[in-house]
Length: 634
Image 1 (cartoon, rainbow, N blue to C red):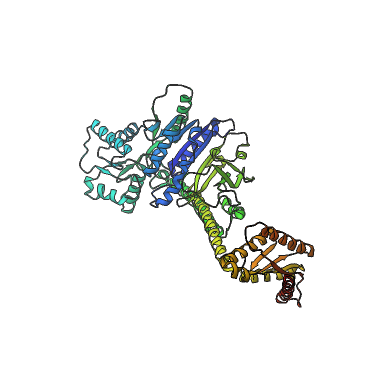
Image 2 (cartoon, rainbow, N blue to C red):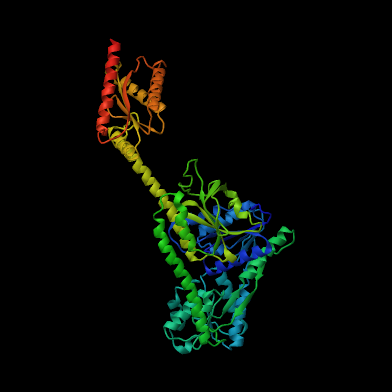
């Protein structure tokens, strides 16, 4: 769908900075590149957030994909922890996708699936304790009640224990929550009893609960594996760096990706493919079961790994802290690049980066107003980097996801798309690709959030500036004609006088006064007088451009000032004014004629000719012109 000659796959995933999601996304990008596929990863950073406005803004990314245009799609439903979002994703896929769809780690009726064979994998772990370690008293720490993985793994535990005629006694099974925050609770349930009643091993339904239990054992002086053996499931990143390193079941994310792509290829080729497939697993034997002895080298390696990750995160957060301060200085999108450079420098592994904003309206600030749902038909990249070099910002069709120049390499492309929003207000999205397909981290999440906050800050500043301008207009403009009032004229005339003085320039100063306003009011009423004043304002606007500033400073008194003006321009202005006024009088729209007197001159400011002095001269000329009009009228 990227129109570069390669087929395009899509990956829908949430919590992409999580360990499993990050590994899956990274290998998918590497494998897609190896196989010659384009890949579009649509990611969100939703975890256990409770701010519904933030959830809505982050969730809007699922409305971006052009589902009908993909050649294959992979979704990981259980990473979408928010049920409403998960249902929205699956509904979009079911209703709009015409390509093969593969669900990872979850069985969905309409899709093909790649799962872990929980039963076979857990059977291997329990048999490992029974056969290799000759243990009989084995407890089980299950996951959330009713969760499909928890149900299958628990039933496997019961079946294997029964197969070996080993009792499952009361107090040998506990339901956790698949997370790492209940270690104290797990310890109390299994170990706050006489030591003779302790289990020899606790098999945990995932790594997070196993690590939480091991940490609590360390705090309370229980040695793992000497006093108690522990195992996990999933082989997450921390299972190798925790103390002691955790024996666990490795689920091959590589195998999942390759199987998912293979299914898509086979279905597209018209082959008969089973609805369910299982990725291979293996037991990763480490220290917590007693298979390996913890050495100083193990500890040094673990500390080094943790330290490296800590340094990366700390460096990113340090950079982001100062970047957030810099972003506060942004006042419009035009100077965004200099501030964004600071942001980009803190994410040096990014190769291609496009900050794409919703394009609305026809004015210069098309991207200021956010949308609440979906995306506009056209996007504009306001910050564009390809192969670590700046490229021109352009507008493009939203269905294409990225600007055309992103495809000029001639190779397949792999991009990740993240929502750009402030709470529930969507400004657009960030499209990004990485050097060697390194996948983004939590630091990048902070980066995107700061950009969204900056966009909102610009909008608020512009809105505030507009409000101030409107209030200023109310102060310096009069309501009937929308011309500047006396305060406005005094302010602007002094500014032009000073500018002309500083730059040795001349300016035009004109006064116009209506000859017959009192007669019109007395004869036809004040409404007619107001209409006459509005007509004069209309004529003044018709002959004035950006250089002439018009004011109504009193009832029928008008002043015009124009910077850097010549005598010929002044003569032409007066001539055009009277021509247009005559046309109004001859239009037949009124039963009276409007007559105007004027005085004008080209002024050069000096210490002798102050603004007040120049206005007095012009006023005298206007009064002389009015006397001439009266004389002719007699």
